[in-house]
Amino acid sequence: ELVIASTQMEQDRIELGNLSQELDTLNAASETMNSLERQRAELQQIIDLEQANIKNAADNINVAIERELRPNSERLTSLETERQKLGA
Image (cartoon, rainbow, N blue to C red; front, top):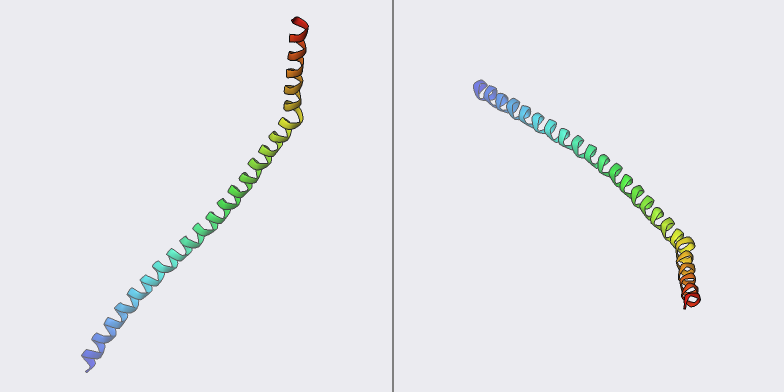
């Protein structure tokens, strides 16, 4: 019985060691996953900020077009029409 108990204890010790290694592996994987999730969240914030900046820049360009370029274009068309009338 002592030999059987000793063998069982050795098997239990080996299994405990294996379980401990598996737990270490799972902990390391969990830490890696958490780190990657934090990085993903940080990158998403950067992407969101850049998208907002791009939209703001596009809005500013559209305002400039409407405020400056379109009136100048209309004025140029009007001047061309007047020039053609005077030249004819």
